[in-house]
Amino acid sequence: MIVASLRWRTVSDACLFCSIVAGDLPASVVAGDDAAIAFLDINPLTTGHTLVVPRRHVTDLLDADGAVAEVSPLLESTGRLLVDRLGADGINVFQASRAPAGQTVFHLHFHLLPRWSGDGMLNVHSIRTQVREDRDTTFARLTG
Ligand code: AMP
Ligand code: ZN
Image (cartoon, rainbow, N blue to C red):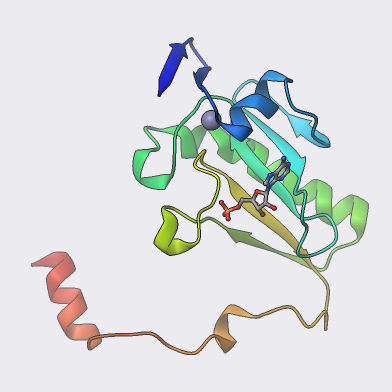
């Protein structure tokens, strides 16, 4: 439930990431600006795994209401921070919207996963295909 709304802040009760934004829950915040904060994931998949979240509460990409644009400057600068300070060779950006996609915290967040050459982490191109129809049919459904 949305309980308050300010210019940059819409807070939701019982939301983990709203509590972190408000400073009510501890987090390892590595960067922030007026619109967003970046903090280390509590259960990192790679060294420096960081979450970038808008300060205002929106649940996911499908409910974002412009929040993606608001977080993008911090997304870019935090990516650079991870490469510059940790010596990462690359970055994956991952975002889950809704439970079937794997979302577990329902406050929009982008995972920044620093990557190193030969680190053995899953590469998106090695995931087995789950395609259910041919590309022409999909194209027609999207554009028809
Ligand atoms: P997702 O499954 O995409 O919704 O990602 C949620 C992420 O939030 C997971 O990677 C968790 O490890 C992370 N997480 C959960 N609680 C905290 C917390 N208190 N501080 C930092 N990261 C958290
Ligand atoms: Zn929230």
